[in-house]
Image (tube, rainbow, N blue to C red; front, side, top):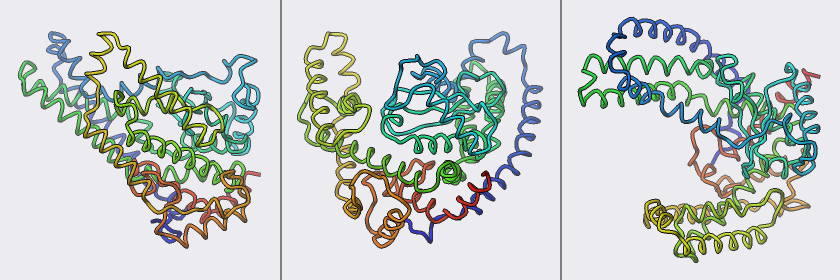
Length: 427
Protein backbone atom coordinates (compact mmCIF):
# COMPACT_ATOMS: atom_id res chain seq x y z
CA UNK A 1 0.00 0.00 0.00
CA UNK A 2 1.27 3.52 -0.76
CA UNK A 3 2.54 5.75 2.05
CA UNK A 4 4.09 9.21 2.22
CA UNK A 5 7.50 7.85 1.22
CA UNK A 6 6.16 6.54 -2.10
CA UNK A 7 3.98 9.55 -2.93
CA UNK A 8 5.50 11.82 -5.62
CA UNK A 9 6.80 15.31 -4.95
CA UNK A 10 5.00 18.16 -6.69
CA UNK A 11 8.09 19.79 -8.21
CA UNK A 12 9.25 16.46 -9.67
CA UNK A 13 5.89 15.87 -11.37
CA UNK A 14 5.90 19.37 -12.88
CA UNK A 15 9.40 18.79 -14.23
CA UNK A 16 8.32 15.39 -15.62
CA UNK A 17 5.49 16.93 -17.67
CA UNK A 18 7.64 19.84 -18.83
CA UNK A 19 10.35 17.41 -19.96
CA UNK A 20 7.78 15.26 -21.77
CA UNK A 21 6.48 18.30 -23.66
CA UNK A 22 9.99 19.40 -24.60
CA UNK A 23 10.43 16.01 -26.27
CA UNK A 24 6.93 16.11 -27.79
CA UNK A 25 7.61 19.31 -29.78
CA UNK A 26 10.25 17.76 -32.08
CA UNK A 27 8.19 14.56 -32.25
CA UNK A 28 5.21 16.50 -33.66
CA UNK A 29 7.49 18.09 -36.30
CA UNK A 30 8.87 14.65 -37.24
CA UNK A 31 5.32 13.36 -37.68
CA UNK A 32 4.47 16.29 -39.94
CA UNK A 33 7.41 15.47 -42.22
CA UNK A 34 6.44 11.78 -42.13
CA UNK A 35 2.90 12.73 -43.11
CA UNK A 36 4.15 14.71 -46.11
CA UNK A 37 6.48 11.87 -47.18
CA UNK A 38 3.68 9.31 -46.95
CA UNK A 39 1.31 11.55 -48.92
CA UNK A 40 3.90 11.85 -51.69
CA UNK A 41 4.40 8.07 -51.77
CA UNK A 42 0.74 7.17 -52.17
CA UNK A 43 -0.70 6.57 -55.64
CA UNK A 44 -3.78 8.77 -55.36
CA UNK A 45 -5.07 7.71 -58.79
CA UNK A 46 -5.29 4.14 -57.56
CA UNK A 47 -7.24 5.33 -54.52
CA UNK A 48 -9.62 7.21 -56.83
CA UNK A 49 -10.23 3.96 -58.72
CA UNK A 50 -10.96 1.97 -55.53
CA UNK A 51 -12.43 4.56 -53.13
CA UNK A 52 -14.46 2.06 -51.07
CA UNK A 53 -11.41 0.03 -50.08
CA UNK A 54 -9.51 3.23 -49.28
CA UNK A 55 -12.31 4.42 -47.01
CA UNK A 56 -12.31 1.06 -45.24
CA UNK A 57 -8.53 1.25 -44.88
CA UNK A 58 -8.70 4.69 -43.28
CA UNK A 59 -11.54 3.69 -40.96
CA UNK A 60 -9.56 0.68 -39.72
CA UNK A 61 -6.91 3.13 -38.49
CA UNK A 62 -9.16 5.97 -37.36
CA UNK A 63 -12.14 3.90 -36.24
CA UNK A 64 -11.54 3.76 -32.46
CA UNK A 65 -10.81 7.49 -32.28
CA UNK A 66 -13.80 8.39 -34.48
CA UNK A 67 -16.10 6.23 -32.34
CA UNK A 68 -14.84 7.90 -29.16
CA UNK A 69 -15.56 11.33 -30.66
CA UNK A 70 -19.03 10.23 -31.83
CA UNK A 71 -19.85 8.85 -28.36
CA UNK A 72 -18.84 12.16 -26.82
CA UNK A 73 -20.90 14.05 -29.41
CA UNK A 74 -23.96 11.86 -28.74
CA UNK A 75 -23.65 12.25 -24.96
CA UNK A 76 -26.79 13.51 -23.24
CA UNK A 77 -25.48 16.92 -22.21
CA UNK A 78 -26.62 20.50 -21.81
CA UNK A 79 -24.43 23.61 -21.73
CA UNK A 80 -25.19 25.63 -18.59
CA UNK A 81 -26.12 28.70 -20.65
CA UNK A 82 -28.84 26.65 -22.38
CA UNK A 83 -30.48 25.48 -19.14
CA UNK A 84 -34.00 26.72 -18.51
CA UNK A 85 -34.51 29.38 -15.86
CA UNK A 86 -36.42 27.02 -13.57
CA UNK A 87 -34.00 24.07 -13.93
CA UNK A 88 -32.24 23.23 -10.68
CA UNK A 89 -29.77 20.54 -9.64
CA UNK A 90 -29.89 20.49 -5.87
CA UNK A 91 -29.02 24.06 -4.86
CA UNK A 92 -27.62 24.96 -8.28
CA UNK A 93 -29.25 26.74 -11.20
CA UNK A 94 -27.69 28.14 -14.39
CA UNK A 95 -26.78 31.45 -12.74
CA UNK A 96 -25.11 29.83 -9.73
CA UNK A 97 -23.15 27.50 -11.99
CA UNK A 98 -22.00 30.40 -14.18
CA UNK A 99 -20.92 32.29 -11.08
CA UNK A 100 -18.96 29.29 -9.79
CA UNK A 101 -17.23 28.89 -13.13
CA UNK A 102 -16.32 32.59 -13.33
CA UNK A 103 -15.13 32.60 -9.72
CA UNK A 104 -13.00 29.51 -10.32
CA UNK A 105 -11.40 31.10 -13.37
CA UNK A 106 -10.71 34.23 -11.34
CA UNK A 107 -9.20 32.31 -8.41
CA UNK A 108 -6.91 30.38 -10.77
CA UNK A 109 -6.07 33.47 -12.86
CA UNK A 110 -7.40 31.91 -16.05
CA UNK A 111 -8.87 33.99 -18.88
CA UNK A 112 -12.68 34.33 -18.97
CA UNK A 113 -15.08 33.09 -20.17
CA UNK A 114 -13.22 29.76 -20.14
CA UNK A 115 -14.38 26.61 -21.95
CA UNK A 116 -18.07 25.68 -22.13
CA UNK A 117 -19.43 23.80 -19.11
CA UNK A 118 -21.79 20.91 -19.84
CA UNK A 119 -24.05 19.04 -17.42
CA UNK A 120 -24.50 15.33 -18.20
CA UNK A 121 -27.13 12.92 -16.85
CA UNK A 122 -24.49 10.55 -15.45
CA UNK A 123 -25.16 9.37 -11.88
CA UNK A 124 -21.53 8.78 -10.90
CA UNK A 125 -19.48 11.30 -8.93
CA UNK A 126 -17.18 12.22 -11.77
CA UNK A 127 -16.28 14.87 -14.31
CA UNK A 128 -14.13 15.17 -17.43
CA UNK A 129 -12.55 17.65 -19.81
CA UNK A 130 -12.36 17.42 -23.60
CA UNK A 131 -9.89 19.43 -25.66
CA UNK A 132 -9.48 18.03 -29.16
CA UNK A 133 -7.60 21.01 -30.55
CA UNK A 134 -7.87 22.04 -34.21
CA UNK A 135 -9.43 25.40 -33.41
CA UNK A 136 -13.17 25.62 -33.82
CA UNK A 137 -13.70 22.26 -35.55
CA UNK A 138 -14.75 20.66 -32.25
CA UNK A 139 -16.32 23.68 -30.59
CA UNK A 140 -19.41 21.66 -29.64
CA UNK A 141 -17.26 18.97 -27.96
CA UNK A 142 -14.49 20.87 -26.20
CA UNK A 143 -15.32 21.83 -22.65
CA UNK A 144 -15.71 20.76 -19.03
CA UNK A 145 -18.27 18.00 -18.38
CA UNK A 146 -19.87 17.79 -14.92
CA UNK A 147 -21.95 14.73 -14.12
CA UNK A 148 -25.26 15.82 -12.66
CA UNK A 149 -24.73 13.71 -9.54
CA UNK A 150 -21.86 15.99 -8.51
CA UNK A 151 -24.28 18.90 -8.17
CA UNK A 152 -26.55 16.89 -5.87
CA UNK A 153 -23.84 15.45 -3.66
CA UNK A 154 -21.04 18.01 -3.35
CA UNK A 155 -20.85 21.43 -1.76
CA UNK A 156 -20.32 24.51 -3.97
CA UNK A 157 -16.66 24.69 -2.89
CA UNK A 158 -16.13 21.00 -3.76
CA UNK A 159 -17.79 21.52 -7.16
CA UNK A 160 -15.40 24.42 -7.79
CA UNK A 161 -12.43 22.24 -6.93
CA UNK A 162 -13.69 19.63 -9.42
CA UNK A 163 -14.02 22.36 -12.05
CA UNK A 164 -10.49 23.48 -11.18
CA UNK A 165 -9.22 19.92 -11.68
CA UNK A 166 -10.78 19.77 -15.16
CA UNK A 167 -9.47 23.24 -16.04
CA UNK A 168 -6.03 21.87 -15.15
CA UNK A 169 -6.48 19.29 -17.92
CA UNK A 170 -7.73 21.98 -20.28
CA UNK A 171 -5.16 24.73 -19.71
CA UNK A 172 -2.21 23.65 -17.60
CA UNK A 173 -1.30 19.96 -17.37
CA UNK A 174 -1.52 18.08 -20.64
CA UNK A 175 0.81 16.43 -23.12
CA UNK A 176 1.54 18.40 -26.27
CA UNK A 177 1.25 15.33 -28.47
CA UNK A 178 -2.30 14.76 -27.15
CA UNK A 179 -3.34 18.09 -28.63
CA UNK A 180 -1.84 16.97 -31.95
CA UNK A 181 -3.24 13.43 -31.79
CA UNK A 182 -4.91 14.01 -35.18
CA UNK A 183 -1.47 14.15 -36.82
CA UNK A 184 -0.48 10.80 -35.30
CA UNK A 185 -3.72 9.27 -36.53
CA UNK A 186 -3.27 10.70 -40.03
CA UNK A 187 0.25 9.28 -40.16
CA UNK A 188 -1.23 5.88 -39.28
CA UNK A 189 -3.95 6.23 -41.91
CA UNK A 190 -1.51 7.29 -44.64
CA UNK A 191 0.86 4.49 -43.64
CA UNK A 192 -1.99 2.00 -43.86
CA UNK A 193 -2.94 3.19 -47.34
CA UNK A 194 0.65 2.97 -48.55
CA UNK A 195 1.14 -0.52 -47.15
CA UNK A 196 -2.04 -1.79 -48.77
CA UNK A 197 -0.89 -0.41 -52.11
CA UNK A 198 2.43 -2.21 -51.79
CA UNK A 199 0.74 -5.51 -50.88
CA UNK A 200 -2.17 -5.10 -53.28
CA UNK A 201 -5.48 -3.55 -52.35
CA UNK A 202 -7.38 -6.66 -53.44
CA UNK A 203 -5.07 -8.98 -51.50
CA UNK A 204 -6.47 -10.51 -48.30
CA UNK A 205 -3.17 -9.77 -46.57
CA UNK A 206 -3.85 -6.07 -46.97
CA UNK A 207 -6.50 -6.19 -44.22
CA UNK A 208 -4.03 -7.93 -41.90
CA UNK A 209 -1.46 -5.25 -42.71
CA UNK A 210 -4.04 -2.54 -42.04
CA UNK A 211 -4.87 -4.04 -38.66
CA UNK A 212 -1.19 -4.15 -37.75
CA UNK A 213 -0.73 -0.52 -38.84
CA UNK A 214 -3.72 0.53 -36.78
CA UNK A 215 -2.52 -1.39 -33.75
CA UNK A 216 0.99 0.05 -34.06
CA UNK A 217 -0.41 3.59 -34.44
CA UNK A 218 -2.49 3.34 -31.29
CA UNK A 219 0.27 1.63 -29.30
CA UNK A 220 2.83 4.30 -30.16
CA UNK A 221 0.32 7.03 -29.38
CA UNK A 222 -0.64 5.40 -26.07
CA UNK A 223 2.95 4.60 -25.08
CA UNK A 224 3.89 8.27 -25.30
CA UNK A 225 1.07 9.17 -22.90
CA UNK A 226 0.67 6.35 -20.41
CA UNK A 227 3.96 7.05 -18.61
CA UNK A 228 2.69 10.49 -17.68
CA UNK A 229 -1.05 9.98 -17.17
CA UNK A 230 -0.91 9.53 -13.41
CA UNK A 231 1.43 12.50 -13.02
CA UNK A 232 -1.12 14.65 -14.85
CA UNK A 233 -3.95 13.43 -12.59
CA UNK A 234 -1.96 14.27 -9.46
CA UNK A 235 -1.19 17.75 -10.79
CA UNK A 236 -4.80 18.40 -11.79
CA UNK A 237 -5.88 17.42 -8.26
CA UNK A 238 -3.24 19.90 -7.15
CA UNK A 239 -4.65 22.61 -9.43
CA UNK A 240 -8.19 22.00 -8.22
CA UNK A 241 -7.02 22.23 -4.60
CA UNK A 242 -5.71 25.72 -5.31
CA UNK A 243 -9.30 27.00 -5.58
CA UNK A 244 -10.31 26.51 -1.92
CA UNK A 245 -7.55 24.50 -0.30
CA UNK A 246 -6.41 20.91 0.16
CA UNK A 247 -9.03 20.06 2.81
CA UNK A 248 -11.92 20.79 0.40
CA UNK A 249 -10.46 18.53 -2.31
CA UNK A 250 -9.82 15.71 0.15
CA UNK A 251 -13.43 15.87 1.40
CA UNK A 252 -14.59 15.58 -2.21
CA UNK A 253 -12.37 12.54 -2.79
CA UNK A 254 -13.76 10.87 0.34
CA UNK A 255 -17.30 11.33 -0.94
CA UNK A 256 -16.31 9.91 -4.32
CA UNK A 257 -14.75 6.84 -2.67
CA UNK A 258 -17.68 6.19 -0.35
CA UNK A 259 -20.15 6.45 -3.23
CA UNK A 260 -18.19 4.04 -5.45
CA UNK A 261 -17.65 1.61 -2.57
CA UNK A 262 -21.36 1.44 -1.74
CA UNK A 263 -22.28 0.72 -5.35
CA UNK A 264 -19.57 -1.97 -5.63
CA UNK A 265 -20.86 -3.66 -2.47
CA UNK A 266 -24.44 -3.74 -3.77
CA UNK A 267 -23.29 -5.06 -7.16
CA UNK A 268 -21.41 -7.85 -5.42
CA UNK A 269 -24.40 -8.69 -3.25
CA UNK A 270 -26.81 -8.90 -6.17
CA UNK A 271 -24.49 -10.72 -8.56
CA UNK A 272 -23.69 -13.31 -5.92
CA UNK A 273 -27.24 -13.88 -4.71
CA UNK A 274 -28.74 -14.20 -8.23
CA UNK A 275 -32.18 -13.78 -6.68
CA UNK A 276 -33.55 -13.00 -10.12
CA UNK A 277 -32.23 -15.92 -12.12
CA UNK A 278 -33.50 -14.68 -15.48
CA UNK A 279 -31.21 -11.63 -15.31
CA UNK A 280 -27.63 -11.65 -16.50
CA UNK A 281 -24.76 -9.58 -15.08
CA UNK A 282 -25.40 -6.69 -17.46
CA UNK A 283 -29.07 -6.61 -16.43
CA UNK A 284 -28.12 -6.48 -12.76
CA UNK A 285 -25.63 -3.66 -13.21
CA UNK A 286 -28.01 -1.65 -15.40
CA UNK A 287 -30.82 -2.12 -12.86
CA UNK A 288 -28.55 -0.84 -10.08
CA UNK A 289 -27.55 2.18 -12.16
CA UNK A 290 -31.22 2.92 -12.91
CA UNK A 291 -32.07 2.72 -9.20
CA UNK A 292 -29.42 5.19 -8.05
CA UNK A 293 -31.14 8.47 -7.17
CA UNK A 294 -29.72 11.93 -7.61
CA UNK A 295 -28.61 13.23 -4.24
CA UNK A 296 -27.81 11.68 -0.88
CA UNK A 297 -29.12 8.28 0.11
CA UNK A 298 -28.35 5.59 2.69
CA UNK A 299 -27.21 2.11 1.77
CA UNK A 300 -30.47 0.67 3.08
CA UNK A 301 -32.57 3.03 0.95
CA UNK A 302 -30.47 2.27 -2.11
CA UNK A 303 -30.76 -1.49 -1.52
CA UNK A 304 -34.57 -1.22 -1.44
CA UNK A 305 -34.54 0.87 -4.63
CA UNK A 306 -32.24 -1.67 -6.31
CA UNK A 307 -34.50 -4.57 -5.31
CA UNK A 308 -37.50 -2.82 -6.85
CA UNK A 309 -35.52 -2.04 -10.01
CA UNK A 310 -34.39 -5.68 -10.30
CA UNK A 311 -37.97 -6.91 -9.88
CA UNK A 312 -39.15 -4.62 -12.68
CA UNK A 313 -36.29 -5.70 -14.94
CA UNK A 314 -37.01 -9.37 -14.19
CA UNK A 315 -40.72 -8.91 -14.97
CA UNK A 316 -39.82 -7.20 -18.24
CA UNK A 317 -37.66 -10.18 -19.17
CA UNK A 318 -40.55 -12.57 -18.50
CA UNK A 319 -42.74 -10.55 -20.86
CA UNK A 320 -40.22 -10.48 -23.70
CA UNK A 321 -41.43 -10.37 -27.27
CA UNK A 322 -39.85 -12.77 -29.79
CA UNK A 323 -37.54 -9.99 -30.95
CA UNK A 324 -36.66 -9.08 -27.38
CA UNK A 325 -36.06 -12.73 -26.49
CA UNK A 326 -33.62 -13.18 -29.36
CA UNK A 327 -31.84 -9.98 -28.38
CA UNK A 328 -31.66 -11.15 -24.76
CA UNK A 329 -30.39 -14.59 -25.74
CA UNK A 330 -27.74 -13.06 -27.99
CA UNK A 331 -26.49 -10.67 -25.31
CA UNK A 332 -26.78 -13.06 -22.36
CA UNK A 333 -23.56 -13.28 -20.38
CA UNK A 334 -21.80 -16.58 -20.01
CA UNK A 335 -22.23 -18.01 -16.49
CA UNK A 336 -18.49 -18.12 -15.97
CA UNK A 337 -18.26 -14.38 -16.66
CA UNK A 338 -20.99 -13.73 -14.09
CA UNK A 339 -19.20 -15.86 -11.54
CA UNK A 340 -15.88 -14.15 -12.22
CA UNK A 341 -17.44 -10.69 -11.83
CA UNK A 342 -19.11 -11.73 -8.57
CA UNK A 343 -15.97 -13.36 -7.19
CA UNK A 344 -13.87 -10.31 -8.03
CA UNK A 345 -16.26 -8.09 -6.11
CA UNK A 346 -16.45 -10.65 -3.31
CA UNK A 347 -12.66 -10.61 -2.95
CA UNK A 348 -12.83 -6.84 -2.57
CA UNK A 349 -15.34 -7.18 0.27
CA UNK A 350 -12.97 -9.58 2.07
CA UNK A 351 -10.00 -7.17 2.01
CA UNK A 352 -9.18 -5.63 5.44
CA UNK A 353 -10.61 -2.10 5.49
CA UNK A 354 -9.59 0.84 7.61
CA UNK A 355 -12.61 1.73 9.78
CA UNK A 356 -11.73 5.38 9.61
CA UNK A 357 -15.25 6.87 9.78
CA UNK A 358 -15.67 5.93 13.45
CA UNK A 359 -12.71 8.13 14.37
CA UNK A 360 -14.67 11.30 13.68
CA UNK A 361 -17.60 13.12 15.22
CA UNK A 362 -19.96 12.78 12.25
CA UNK A 363 -19.28 9.47 10.48
CA UNK A 364 -19.76 9.53 6.69
CA UNK A 365 -20.34 13.28 6.59
CA UNK A 366 -16.87 13.94 5.17
CA UNK A 367 -16.71 17.55 6.26
CA UNK A 368 -13.24 17.26 7.77
CA UNK A 369 -11.13 20.24 8.69
CA UNK A 370 -7.33 20.18 8.40
CA UNK A 371 -6.90 18.79 11.92
CA UNK A 372 -9.23 15.87 11.20
CA UNK A 373 -7.56 15.25 7.86
CA UNK A 374 -4.19 15.07 9.58
CA UNK A 375 -5.68 12.43 11.91
CA UNK A 376 -6.96 10.55 8.87
CA UNK A 377 -3.55 10.62 7.16
CA UNK A 378 -1.86 9.38 10.34
CA UNK A 379 -4.40 6.56 10.55
CA UNK A 380 -3.78 5.60 6.91
CA UNK A 381 -0.03 5.46 7.40
CA UNK A 382 -0.32 3.55 10.68
CA UNK A 383 -2.23 0.74 8.90
CA UNK A 384 -0.54 0.17 5.52
CA UNK A 385 -2.13 -3.31 5.31
CA UNK A 386 -5.68 -1.92 5.17
CA UNK A 387 -7.50 -0.15 2.36
CA UNK A 388 -9.35 3.12 2.69
CA UNK A 389 -12.17 1.91 0.40
CA UNK A 390 -12.94 -1.53 -0.98
CA UNK A 391 -12.42 -0.57 -4.61
CA UNK A 392 -10.34 -2.18 -7.40
CA UNK A 393 -7.94 0.77 -7.73
CA UNK A 394 -7.21 0.65 -3.99
CA UNK A 395 -5.72 -2.84 -4.41
CA UNK A 396 -3.64 -2.01 -7.48
CA UNK A 397 -6.20 -2.75 -10.21
CA UNK A 398 -6.06 0.78 -11.64
CA UNK A 399 -6.92 1.94 -15.15
CA UNK A 400 -3.35 3.19 -15.55
CA UNK A 401 -4.58 6.79 -15.58
CA UNK A 402 -6.05 7.58 -12.17
CA UNK A 403 -4.02 6.92 -9.02
CA UNK A 404 -5.78 5.17 -6.11
CA UNK A 405 -7.85 7.50 -3.93
CA UNK A 406 -5.55 6.71 -1.01
CA UNK A 407 -2.57 7.98 -3.04
CA UNK A 408 -4.43 11.08 -4.22
CA UNK A 409 -5.28 12.03 -0.64
CA UNK A 410 -1.72 11.42 0.54
CA UNK A 411 -0.35 13.45 -2.39
CA UNK A 412 -2.48 16.47 -1.55
CA UNK A 413 -1.54 16.28 2.13
CA UNK A 414 2.17 15.67 1.57
CA UNK A 415 2.41 18.59 -0.88
CA UNK A 416 -0.07 20.87 0.90
CA UNK A 417 2.49 23.59 1.69
CA UNK A 418 3.60 23.85 -1.95
CA UNK A 419 -0.03 23.80 -3.09
CA UNK A 420 -0.96 26.52 -0.59
CA UNK A 421 2.06 28.56 -1.72
CA UNK A 422 0.89 28.27 -5.35
CA UNK A 423 -2.60 29.20 -4.25
CA UNK A 424 -1.55 32.31 -2.33
CA UNK A 425 0.63 33.34 -5.27
CA UNK A 426 -2.59 33.92 -7.21
CA UNK A 427 -4.09 36.11 -4.50
